[in-house]
Each structure stands twice: as structure tokens, then as C-alpha cells.
Amino acid sequence: MSAKPGRTILASTISKIYDEEIQSKVTAMKSIRPQGPLLVGFLANNDPAAEMYARWTQKTSESLGIRYELRQFEDRDLLEENIIEANNDDSVDGIMIYFPVFGNAQDQYLQQVVDKNKDVEGLNFVYYQNLYHNVRYLDNKKLLKSILPCTPLAIVKILEYLKIYNPLLPDGNQMYGKKCVVINRSEIVGRPLAALLANDGAIVYSVDVNNIQKFTRGESLKLIKHQVEDLGDYSEDSLKDVCKDADVIITGVPSESYKFPTEYIRDGAICINFSSHKNFKEDVKTKASLYVPMTGKVTIAMLLRNMLRLVENREKLKSIQ
Image 1: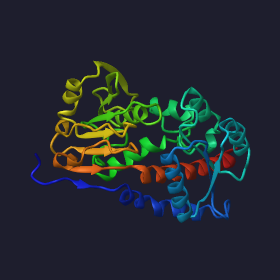
Image 2: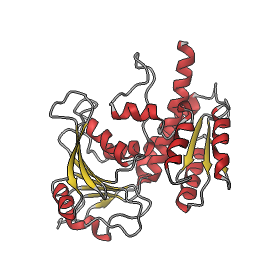
Image 3: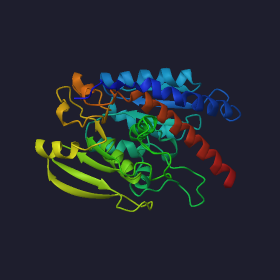
Image 4: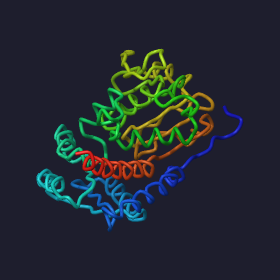
């Protein structure tokens, strides 16, 4: 057991760092967006977590000079045509959907309905392909930055804030030598997060109910795509084994009953939870040196940064065409 209890780091503390950057960019866009950029959120479910996320997004957006409009639908089947209308509406700068909508593969289809030039969540297949292949720009001249999925990006920014990333190493290698465990392999957060961290040099153990996978970028410091190795079926023993020397443990299990075993946490490790449920037990700080219980406010900051980047990309495209 650690001699001192660990510290809780709130997402709101970290997100404030990005507020000034977002506000200054909004101010710089006054000539093209006098009233501020417009973000449209589509909500077609009765999920309280999604409604809370929508309220947070609206409050944060408006506090930073960004207009926010929530469009709610009782009939989910109306969603697609309304997203297409927003795609074609020049007054709309960013679009997001509060998932789950249908709770199946149809949701993956809806992600692709959103125009990639307005996709603030970074879920378009072009952005995912770039992420998995460690491509950081949309063009050969490296003028247009690619967009990253906002929750995985938020966790990267949290790790930067916690000084887990090593700024003395070059970009793309700043997680070299670090071991991370990610308890979630969803296509929205868990898998892209594992790839991002591996692409930055970490060894990442990706855990789900079926098995454990190891994401690495090889032994070289050269910037290349990550590799994935199956380590076998999931078991409590295998989870304990990969956690014993982990620098970072990140959880995102969408279940109120799931609790990560505190005894598996190495003394002094960093623990981050991105689930809307508390995945760690109350005694987490007897082992963890730093504990981040929620990531939502940093996710919203990344979502707004993504939108401003999309506006910048569109303006750059106009200037070079």
C-alpha cells in the first residue's frame, strides 16, 4: 500500500487549459463566422447520460462563443435525412450524434452519413484509417491536419497533462517505454485509444471480455504503424499479469456493477476512467498516485477543438483551390 493516498485530478481542471485556445480561435474567425461557429447535436434516444452530455456540450460551447443547437427526434428513422440536410447547410460547421441510436450496426452507418468535413467526433472512416495507419495529415503537403476521435484524444491530452508523455522525446515517440492497460475495446474509444498510444510508442494491453491483445509499434523509435498480437483468452489471472507493471490503467466498461480490482493496480500507477459509471472502487487511491474519475469535460474540449480545426481546414482548402 502507498504511504500517501493518491490525488484526484478532475477533468474540469484539465479542460480549462484549452478554453483560452478555443476562445482565441473563435475570435480569430469573426470575419468568416461573425456570430460564432455553429455545432449541431442530434439526439434520438432517451439515454440520461446522452442528455447530460448534450447539456454539458451546450453550456461549454456557449461559454466559449460557439453556437450550439440540439435537434431531438422521437422517430429515429428521421435522423438520416436530417443529418444530410445539416451536411448541405453552409451555416452548420460541426455535427455530432449522441449514441447509441439503434444500438447496432446501423449506428456505424449513421457515423458515416455525417460529412467528414463536419464530423467533430472524428468517426468518419477516413479519420479512422489515418489513425490506424499513423497518418497525421489529410494531404501530402501537410497543410490539413487529420481529426482524431474526441474521447481517445481527450485521454491522450489527460496523459500529457499528467506528464506521462515525455516532451523530451520527438512527437510520435513520447510514450516510449510506458506500459498501459485499456479495459475496453469498443470501436469508438477502446481500440482507437490503444492504437493511438501504441503509435506514440507505448506498449498497450487491450482487454475485453473475450481476450487480451497487445498493441505495440515495434522496438524502433521510427514512426511506423502499430502491430497487434493476440495474447489469449481473458481471465482474471491474465488481467492481473498485464497490470502488475502497468504505468497507466484506463477503464471504460459501460456497467454500473463492474469494478476494477484495486489489488491489481501497481503502487504509483495512473488510473483513468472514461465510462459514465465509476469503474474503480473507492479505495483506488490507496494504490494509484493519480486518479481521473471522469473524462467528459476534456472530451467536449477536444470536440470543440476538432470543429475549429475542420473550419480551418475548409478555409485552407478554399485558399489553395
